[in-house]
Length: 477
Image 1: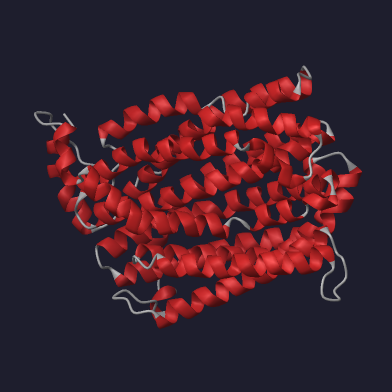
Image 2: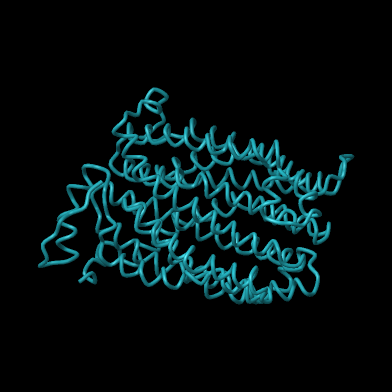
């Protein structure tokens, strides 16, 4: 039934779009999330304790990411659809309400990390040596958290208006600043004190400030039909707030619950041996590299699908989603394959012991399969959100996590006490179940629920073309 829809996005057009829009977004996302990778790699000469401590701190940052990403992803949905419909007022109101909610989340996490960093760290590990080493790092990184959400929100706005190069350039500059400052403060160069883990945090903080400053310059100097208007930014009314929360809260619940699930899994890992924790920290860097890249692809898919649906072209959004669910996992598989083949020199960057190196090698091998499956699930869930459906993916992901992965990992690691690699193998067990369910749901097209007038008007015809001969009841916002 859906084969004839391929005319709306040929493979040639699809690949051209991915190269011109998705690739810069993916690279920017990769660079903007590389700060913790740079910190971990550059601390490799300080020993396994420093690597493991920053690895634990990165899990706090992951929980923080999950806490604000619901609003960030909600902003992408509205940005993309309103930009597709050339609705400047809708874009501005989305920016304002997202700014308020994301700032509140940033303020809460910053306060706890700055005032009581040991509280967060003690949740993830019972090893006092890691808590003492990590506290100075997470305290300083707490000051950087607000800048992180501002960078994400401004980048989302720029992407939705197809200004994808600006965030990429800003991320490159910020990464260079982070690298240079890490070199100076971690190792005590040019007369500066040798600060180790705390020095890495200084680089993260300053690079975050630089990133936001550059984004603001690009934002107000670049030319675009859709501009930010201070009067419109905070002019949202109750109906708009209700619509925004209706789309964003399911995503927020998804990300929060996912963050809690990952926190439980990381608690299990944090109670393994120091070699296993250090190996996990190194693996998280490699995984973060892959995740950042396909997360960038997913953000681009979000923008393009949302733009097509919002502008009254749901068939094009539908086809783009299907092609992305095939193409992006192939890219992920190739990236992880290269990392697996180069595991020795790659893991050697972290100063790991032979036992930790062995752990890292087999963790990459396990992720070779699950990483590709995870990418497909992530891409489809982002497309669902861009299309206006935020509940299906949320329910599926949370059920899979808490009914399969979390209990299996907890029982294996905390109850039975199985070897570390067996414990690790249970972390991604829910992905296969989700893959089957999401592939079926993609084909139905029921996830396309426009929030714009143009999108709603075009929906009935698309549904008739998708399932000819069947009586349709079109979805809406």
